[in-house]
Length: 572
Image 1 (cartoon, rainbow, N blue to C red):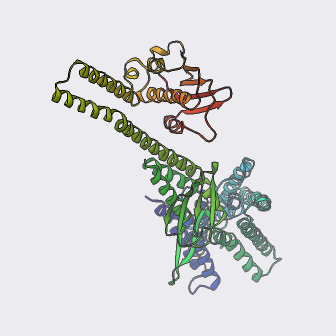
Image 2: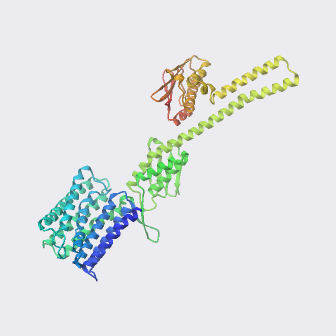
Image 3: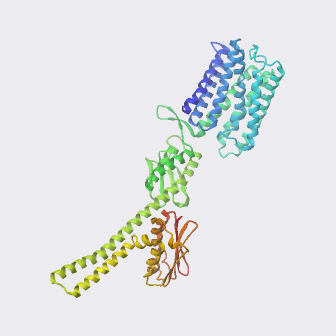
């Protein structure tokens, strides 16, 4: 059973009770004030149903439904007491439900405004005391000796004073608590960043209390009948009207009521909360492995969450991914942390963007930064892979391929001329050189020493034939440790590239390589005494991306030579 159905049950009972009770009390034809009462009861029930069905996780809608139900049951009890002696006991119970209506409107609805939560823990005693006072007042009203229309109450206590004091005392406590809550609401209104919606609730609460004061004055003969009609109208309509205004004007609980199209259709829509948008976006990003497509999902989440005509993710390099039809300029822009880019939003399809929309866009900037980083890393990895493929292709074409072509030509010449020992000796040397070059090329892909002997042995083999003195130092026990192929390969190539850069760019005379494993991290450092890289030169960026993809990192320090430090997570 969905939230709409669950909320519809008390809403229908409340509306039916308010209408039937008003007509039963006066009879037909009913005077205008009875129809007004019935209409207000139906409006309150509809408002509670709207909030409870659209935002079932927020207690506020259910509070309004409880108030509407209390009003409807109380009205039906009054009408029943007017029409029947046999059901006087049931009429007394139902009539006493008015207690909860006033208590909810005076205490709990303004106290829990606007998000359905207490303003702070300091208000818990007020909430508990209000509940106890309402229960006592309800019991007292139910056990009074007479119903509203002078019928004998079969549930009445023999000790009448107990019921009277319970009724009067409970109502007095609830009224005092209502004044305390109203004062607290005024304080929250003065401190609130969004004072507009608080202003309407403050006005509604104060008018409600003032209306009740007029009703009390009428009971003591100090107010006329016309004034008491306005007082009752204030009691019944002030708070629901304030909530209705905040719902329409300030989109309370993200529920929008507007007019769309030339036919003046009333649109009641609900925008997902920040938590819902982030949850859906997280699921969508997990199901979308391609980083560029993730940016598209992010733009779509912004457009859907804000209900705007279009939304875009702009990267720092000017690349933009747009969701929707970008026919108008951006009206809201939020930068992504780290200068990675920004989120852009077009105008809303209905109404204007609010401060709440800005906060939602700021919340989306966090996953946007992660998605942009992922897209940038993926692009760099793709470029690095393409660059490596071209390097291998160039080496094969310019080196081994040409040597093989020359070797084949030599063999053809030897067969045609019957070459002697000297020619075959040269061809043998040429074949050996080609084999050596091919092995070196293969070592750049995945050296056999790494697969067979592990990281330390492979690094020692790589550094053994360097033209400068090179020292390899490994921590105790590391030589016998093995790690995954990805981890060992990444660290081996990091060392190989750092060593090659030390020879090629830094013109080093000495190189020292250190390998260690501590704190669940496999580390490698390459230090040389060369001149370092030229300004603006970052030859190890592809390797940094490769380590980053494994959750590691790479740092380059200069000063008295160059120090390259690489690490990856590795349990071993």
